[in-house]
Image 1 (cartoon, rainbow, N blue to C red):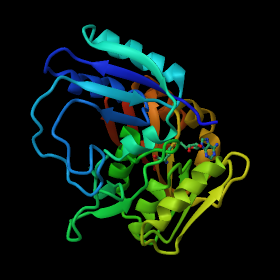
Image 2 (cartoon, helix red, strand yellow):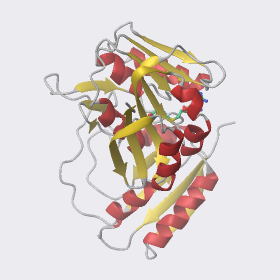
Image 3 (cartoon, rainbow, N blue to C red):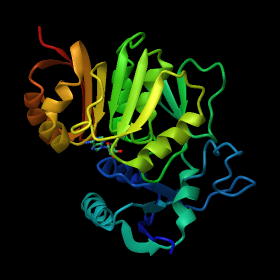
Length: 300
Ligand code: SAH
């Protein structure tokens, strides 16, 4: 049986700033796909034609989006938040049965830059001479597209670290994007660990899209019960609750003098997270909407 996707259909009556406002609200949620249904001239192969570049300046049209979520509760929370921010926007809740729908609409994703990295879907590869490290990832419904604010902030913080010849651990690797970034930056060894076998499968298939050094390994495992060897740089884009509860385990995975990149928590959790990691000092904090990412160095 094919699953259904919990979807919000949003429509504005006039051309206005809804698109920007809705995008701002959605930064607090994790929609798996956004399908832009506003009537615009289509490229020859249709809206999701991967071989055709996006139309540079589409004529303005009122917002008409399908936003697809993994989880109906999250869809409903997002609907309430969007309604609070934009009371005039028409919002409809539907369940779309077509399993390919989300995958197809993800084709509208384009390459994004984060620090010295560009995360690119296979259909939007930057030119060869681009001045950045390109990580190709096949956007996956469950494990991220690399576009999430926390992922991008982790990449920006990773850009601040010279990982050459260092060992790196990526706790909760998901689609593997942070591990691949570290490996492509010259780390001596990188282990991407995830408790979820499907995440590791998705990381391995993304890895096949890149020319990676053989320094990278993906493994299924829970770092709390099945700890990998400690590393010089530990990346943990988890949740505030998990970071606080597992702080001791995470700290034990950082080699003496090592650095930590933490994200996945919001501004209300910063104090709790920093307190749990008080053996470290904060070197840099990035905030995007409500999300926070920090780079921590050992306290000396
Ligand atoms: N690092 C990726 C994905 C972050 S999502 C990125 O930055 O985009 C968090 C991931 O952590 C999920 O894939 C989840 O399965 C994994 N995870 C959660 N708890 C874990 C644990 N205790 N051990 C290993 N992986 C865990």
